[in-house]
Length: 543
Picture 1 (cartoon, rainbow, N blue to C red):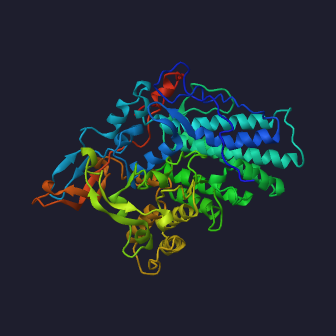
Picture 2 (spheres, rainbow, N blue to C red; picture 1 turned 30 degrees about the horizontal axis):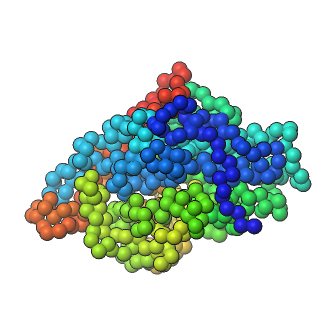
Picture 3 (cartoon, rainbow, N blue to C red; picture 1 turned 135 degrees about the vertical axis):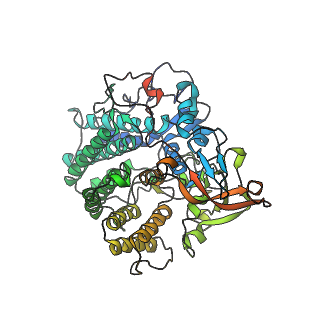
């Protein structure tokens, strides 16, 4: 039977009872209250599927929203693969580049005149409502952790009644809970200065720990997931459970086998290592660890856990709108493709030819909110032969890692440790996998610097809208202040001709120096601190 997601489990999840139209309208995210029994297999299946429901919240002034997707969008716009000129959910302030320097040397500071930190901290309150960008990724991941904790508790309940191979069934559900819990901690630790560790359903605490401790917790849980998966057999029960706990719009017909699942864990562990260290902090041992993990990571024929949409747009968690391919599609066009992303394509790349067409009129300094808010390019719908957008709810993106990400992570590790040709072969492999049509670069005598540039451009193109852009920009130093070596030279910006020297008619794609000056890790949201008083901690919770 085709299984749709029908909001089986709606839990009460919000930070702080008694808030008024001031934050996501949910109470304690660590205390989900399922409406179905967790003492039966049917109840476990429904509750496991219900993890997706934790991605949804009723946001004041915005209505029912997939807040997981809001977090993904923040990553895309800070990684400058897309942009959003609108204030909803705080996007325009998240996306506010600090300064742009024109070829003449003229410096254009953003219209607000301050950096991202100042702007976002100005909205860090419950009173700011939906404009507080800090709250979304924090909230959705702690909601997921709460659901996972409840599921793990249910699995050791003596009242639980299962038939058949009970041990195998319990391990399947346990692996599912551990995967999502490890994934959620990975996102918290990779985005916030600090977090809390909570492993008991219905309990939270004020014992905030540094984001490195959160990442250690994520790694521990992911290793426990691997151990659990080692005890899972792919039986008819396995296939039945996986089809029940994965929604049809996320493609539950393509079964993620236990071995495929384990490979996703290894790829995620490689991402976590890389995402949380700057390039100059990575040691040879770190790079070797990346190689070891990616050697065990996702393969070309693997199925991964993915985020899709229902054809109706009404029976899923995207609401026909909150999905990377829909958000950037012309029907909704809440986000737009960045010129800095487009310039990564090499001439003759089939992905560009298929993926984009020019707007009849370029977008320039939209709403007067900053020069970075402009583009000449419109993504082509998947249903019309394109790759990155949809007008009728098509396409899936990985929740975590992909085969392409795994191979490119390994490619970077190889190139940076002296195995240039081996790394370039993986770059060629990914380009072939995505049918780029580009000539191979391995064996062409590239230097290490040239090889890294080939890799960098490919990683940007191959992983478009898949949640890696900000992590990469941060670890490569692009988002640092210019005074610390950050920023991007020769970044294409659509400049009004009257700003150029000499002045020119219309608008002109111009190579500029772009200084982002973004925070590396975000503040713990005030929405949390208002109701969860920190204990005796010495670590910073705010930038």
